[in-house]
Length: 380
Ligand code: GMT
Image (cartoon, rainbow, N blue to C red):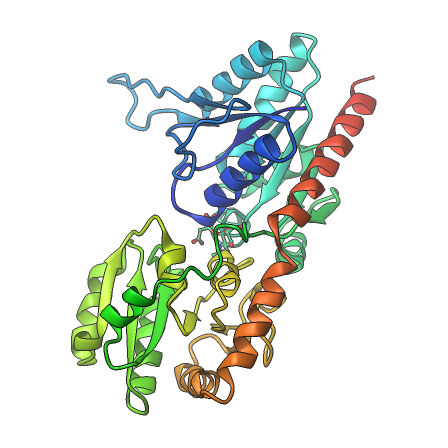
């Protein structure tokens, strides 16, 4: 099958999932994958004969205060679909990919080409940005017009139906993890460097946007540190980072907190961690928590959105209400107790294995086949 994947090429979860999916489809299942994005996807840094990258060229013109990216993307989709004889277009993150794919489909239909479109909803494309009135009519229309729609969790599926007036069926295809990459690497020298006296190591990874509530990770750490020797690594970067560094100083925890910025090989950090903190206000799935679990790291999280589908309370970690940092700190201390830690680590890994890329990737092939069939029937 020839598959066109449209996604954000950046560090965010939707881009990571789209890229890893494309890699799996090409290298493990033998499909031909064409990425259509404005930059080379971050995790697409190697050669594979079945993977192609088509850059969306955005031209500026003095009249354009806002360069029309969606038009350039749509035109590129039309060009690639025709030239490469694609079988299906898969849009990850509805804005603006689903509406661009819809327009590309209409243009191709005029040329006598039937082009099935699959849209995968990732979270904020529905729960934060998509429901905003400046986008809502276009987003709900283009989701409904896709031949198949998937969401990354049951929670996101329900929320999408609550927010939009849709007639389409949404199928849940959960996010996944590559267990050959996210596994416990032996990095004892890292652990000794960060925690020279055997302190427990807590880790938070995010793009440091408000919705991640990374400040709560600092609050939880402060409370845990009052009880046991520990360190915190803050991985990632984003608009809240400067405020977070200030907060760290206010809480007087800087000596034990390190901001690492963006780390490409995040599994090396996770490999030496004892606990992962995910205090997010919203999270359709919580891919970063799954990646931590694959490295045998239990999770202390909020119970927002789809997190309970990933982090099972009392088994793989523990959950609290959003913002309840006292409860999160108590949970962290419970998990970090040496009597309990091995139990949580073992279950975290077992849970991650349920979401292996080998299990989930073929589910998308089924969705493509369904979209091709639906689109063929619809075009008759
Ligand atoms: O929220 C982010 O950090 C990025 C965002 C994205 O679209 O890149 O993540 C969303 O998609 C991820 C992959 O499906 C999910 O694991 C995240 O939970 C989801 N984020 C939110 O819903 C806030």
